[in-house]
Image (tube, rainbow, N blue to C red; front, side, top):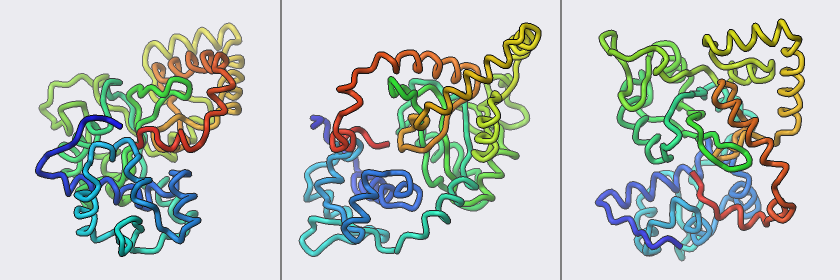
Length: 294
């Protein structure tokens, strides 16, 4: 357990926000570990399990966490305070999955050094206030390489309404760390964050195409076409997609990155995967569940 204990004045708010996210429509449909417990126990999950999650370890003592959760309008504690569940029944998973896909946007171009907290703060302070409907987002999922679990600047952000998602894509020009750019902003186009709907991105991915075209990719594609390399490239992409079990996103969301930098990173990691030991692959599911949840 980490020695760090969060002591900010917003302790209660942070605890409620984090645990409410774990039980949210957005998270439960992708968090296989938590969902199995949720489903097997009529929605109840022991608080001691929640407290082992990476982002909850900083909140102690347990008694203070319990007091904070008592004031949640989305969760309910058992009489002894040992377990917790959501108040509202969960919607049909197929419906939730369709909502998530419609409301999600794929974004590339963030610095690779950013943490989950950095991204959440950026959207909370710089993006959410500009949205037309809800002034917050449902979730942010950092996409990480499969082998090394490294974030490389790509996220999938789920908005609470499709209207907000469409507005974010079509009406806002975004740059990190500035936020929303106006007409007078002196930022080069190449420095703007690239964004498109998750559905459109998945169609590109299935077609083996890149997200965005620049002079480098134009020259490379021209060279491949003249040398017959485009067919080999497509075969390589199709093979990688077939062998992949997911994107390595923080919450298990299936995705990937097809920008030039992101794809090159994934190709590098695919080579590393062959070197992984069988012991690593056979690590227990319980151990995986206690990794940092973001």
